[in-house]
Length: 154
Image 1 (cartoon, rainbow, N blue to C red):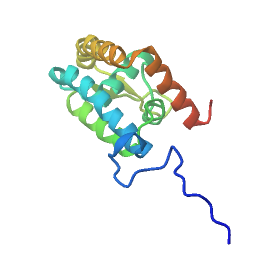
Image 2 (tube, rainbow, N blue to C red; image 1 turned 180 degrees about the vertical axis):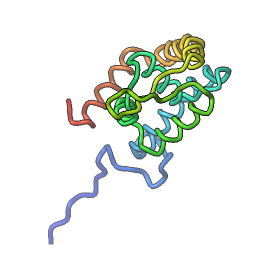
Image 3 (cartoon, rainbow, N blue to C red; image 1 turned 180 degrees about the horizontal axis):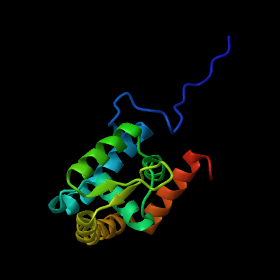
């Protein structure tokens, strides 16, 4: 009978998902996302927007009228999350739909939406600066590399 020595690979997951540096990557990346989002949420709180709602307004501000499907793809949001944010933003009169003559009803910013975006943008930029100061350019580049690797684009 042949026995293999018992060794633990460096990536082995601890029993406790919060234990040490070898815990679940999904747990750690979700925690990182929550920590980063918290600084953005804190900066945006006086605007009445969440980070996701800001992102919707920002894409509409940059791209102009766009379909819900295209917006969800750009923001990588699930359909239910996208629908919830659209409803909330419509109820705040920040976005609207309009017929484009081709049978579609793309989303667009309202005048109020443009004003709220203009107020929120410098706050988002401040959160962006604080987050980049905390993780540095190397941390930012690492996030880009990890995202590309998991998307299959190393």
